[in-house]
Image 1 (spheres, rainbow, N blue to C red):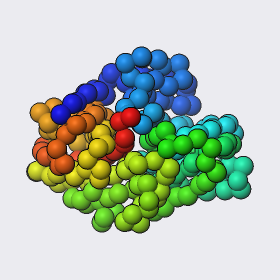
Image 2: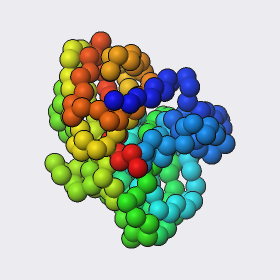
Image 3: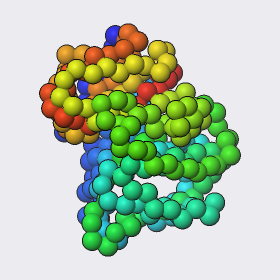
Length: 236
């Protein structure tokens, strides 16, 4: 088994006033050549966007982009004609492929927006751009892993062009397990809220650990009621 631990306070950061961002991997003005990616996981940004502000229209290409609002509401627009609002409980996927232009703004004039944005390298370049979003039932996340994203849409998940899986659990205090969807993959865990022991590492809020070359299942001891995200990706 191989592991890499990233504490919350070791992340890169930026404060633009309207945007407060934390970067798990090198991004924009934050560069660390030891933290370029975890396998096919290229970006995990933890953004707080001030009311009535956001990212004006800008391009992406050849990247699978997944957005998970944690609080507040996100207004999305793109050159494919989508004008959407995404709220907590929903997940958005966007395959940039040959090229897409989009904008992202806080839909509220009074409340901040907090979201995770995840970029995963696709299996091939040049895919046709596509967009989708889905609401997931809260009861399907309580004490069991809810699959948000997969390569094939299994279990009513959203699909992307990569053998990657994104899951979330709201776990009660006690012992739980994570089972790999593909034992050849690695998995990057982010403690959204709470605390737990994972392969003899204590994770507190926004701490993360990457694990690969592991057994098919991993034991997780939660010290309190917690929210944990798993991003499972090919390592090469």
